[in-house]
Length: 500
Image 1 (tube, rainbow, N blue to C red):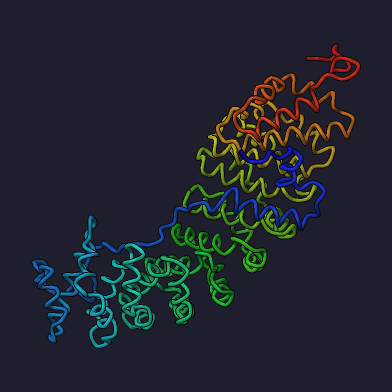
Image 2: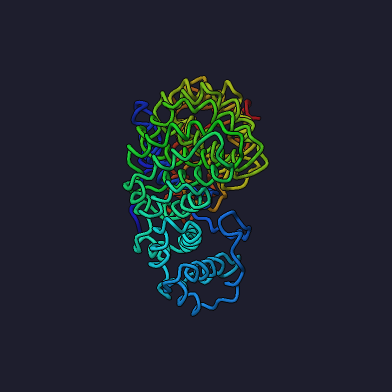
């Protein structure tokens, strides 16, 4: 059986009382990594091109390849006849573009990838380059092993060279393929970056670029921003940020969504990473996008601002000054629980700051929606709300604590003591223990007793003394013995006549 910890010791592990703001911010970052973990986003890592529409490069070609077998394809790509090479490559691409169960494994095992990479280099034959790039795009949309097969065949450098192709469709397909490769992980992402792909990608953007092409470039840039261990290098980030800042002003939903995801990846982790992003002046626009009715925009913009308020006091203040708290109240009431959760997480980060940030939460009337989440939200949302209360309580001034007491938070908080998540139950007990300590220090313990009795808190805590989890039972026992035990003069309530 593990050694029991005193509740006071556990309090120290997630409380911020008595620490300066810098230390509290650093612990908050650690808490985000350990307790909230990396949330999954809704952006696709890889995308397969299954469009069967014709284009200027291939519309003149016959459909002769439609009856090709895999054996015919192998024979064709190894032919010295460029027409047969093209028809076989196109046939392979069409197999790989099937909506269901494309034969990626069979194509790889047939040894076709090296030939497809070779075809990327055939400048006089843009139709062949296009079909080869498309086929490789779809292979790279598969598993990590399948993507690795494309990379190991040497596809990255010729794909980057195709970013300078005079043929728009060839160029766009190369962008797509590189996006799939970059999305696989930091190793391939950094391989693309080290081959100087970012300047070439950015140079493709112009005022008359087709919207579909710009969407692909934006998505590929976002994949070059994502993944950690390691994060993308500072030079790459600084190359991309001005363009991402410009794309954030676009009107297209897909471009806005992928740009916000890119910024969310760039604001994960250290304060220096956050600084690079906020220094671009993007916060007002991000807060504006948090009001979007489109979830594909709202989710990543809220995530990005939530990341920013895990940073320094100054970075959090910049988000507040940009109006995030004006929007947060609406998002805490959002019909989608995923948005409620993100909003509560962002609020918990502000609540972990100094007293003047806590005061802003009160000023913007965010306690009522917080209490509503504790009462009625899905449990995953309630957990974030509990963290918000914990951070709020342990950093608040006397008057702010009084506001918390009278917000109605205690009842729903105590109701969550029956939750199946032992960590959350332990945190709630720690909150109660802390509130009693503060009430005692402020000579308002009797008020705390009365509030507890009003919501049946004493009975709820007493019932946990026999809990199977030793930490929970010890914490409950400590509260009862320390704050509800019999005193020398008899009853724990000095004036029973005041009970409600």
